[in-house]
Length: 117
Image (cartoon, rainbow, N blue to C red; front, side):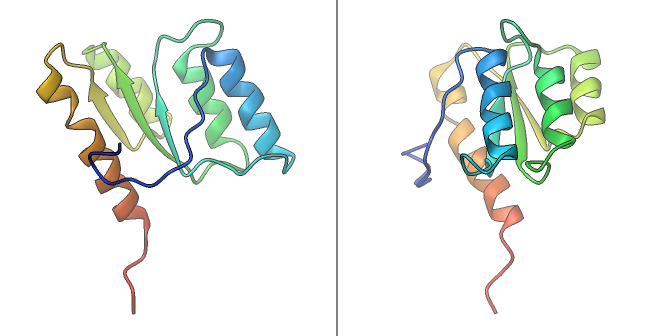
């Protein structure tokens, strides 16, 4: 994210349960809602689809969601798109390819920001 010059506060959830707790805190105004969520499909305790459903049904529904996963399954892509994901990034094994994640996040953020008048 630094290489893509994204200035952001980052919260890392170790598993789906922590992600749900964070969303609950945002729902009750105890923490700011996320602008962008990088979401793995295969989280322990809750799956990415569960998190995305919860996110889209609550006050953080406007957050951009980029699915970042090792899955290249068409079924997974379709499910995440159907749940409202804004993008899908398959984790590559190559470092240079992985470094494309930052610019992808920047592009998503820029698409959400209205142009200056």
